[in-house]
Image (cartoon, rainbow, N blue to C red):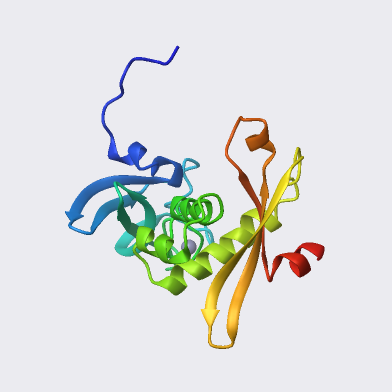
Amino acid sequence: MPDATFGCPDLTTFCRLDELGLVVVGQRLEPDRAVLACRVLEADDGTEGWCRRCGCAGRPRDTVTRELAHEPLGRRPTTLLVTIRRYRCTGCGHVWRQDTSRAAEPWARLSRRGLAWALEAIVCQHLSIARVTQGLGVAWNTANDAVLAEGRRVLINDPGRLNGVKVIGVDEHVWRHTRRGDKYVTVIIDLTPVRAGTHPARLLDIIPGRSKAAFKA
Ligand SMILES: [Zn+2]
């Protein structure tokens, strides 16, 4: 039986930002995108305000903002504008900022949810990189670089990714049209859950190159 009760409406959980260690504190709805102002949840372990170099207390110094493309909601891009607090150590003067590693990779322009959405869109729903770019509201190269890097990080570096795999699909995509010819990537998809009727396909691997040569390797 599905639970018939409702929780309070909450933008943070609706956008799954609690999973990223963020809280929504404001919204700005523009015609072609939504911007969510966020702040960073303090680390549970209580280490945030303490200097890692000398152990003295830090004093809040100022804030910086970081813009992240999130998954699109309501068919328009969602941009996160994250305010990050910076501390200065009262002992040694060292300056550090709040940890945003749950929200995104260092220097990344996409949130972890944004990246996951992009990977699934390309591989499981066969959306073009142009559509993904539109969905995220970022430049083509930003989306392209982020998706290739994330593909490598979550798939190729995960030794357990082939556990339980019985049926695989191999699919070839033109990744980028260049003057010297097209560049291809081969994606390998776990179709085991599809055949069993339990879940959608799962992405296993993305390999630069065309299917035959890439798959052999
Ligand atoms: Zn210090």
